[in-house]
Image (cartoon, rainbow, N blue to C red; front, side):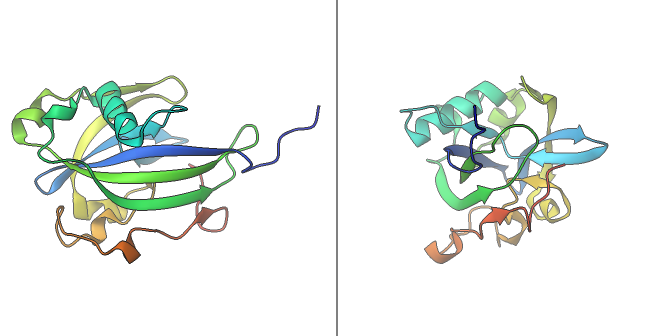
Length: 171
């Protein structure tokens, strides 16, 4: 049987730039001796509406209920990724990153450990959003370039450059 060609399958991944004031939630893991920081989120299931997938992922990973957010999630970035990764034929992945804002009381109730069947436990950390410029962030969205966590963006800045093997390397 011939192996599948890379990027012939497309997966959609939702993620949250989850803010509490000027700090944002990141899932921290050490991979191959290096720190990696991931925005909470995951893959959209077949037939699942995008916002329902975001709510499900935030609930699964952090215990965040959709009614706990200050306002509806705001689509902020779209990133097309065709990056070779270890394992079989990689899918093309379309990352939809939403900004979500929560209050202090909700933050205090969130889970602090996120378990992934593939990569193991990750720990929830809070970091000033400007400090993400110095972190290995996945997906690598320009959070630190926001003037403020709630600053509006024009549509032209929403679509980020495509990720491929020339501009992204897996840790």
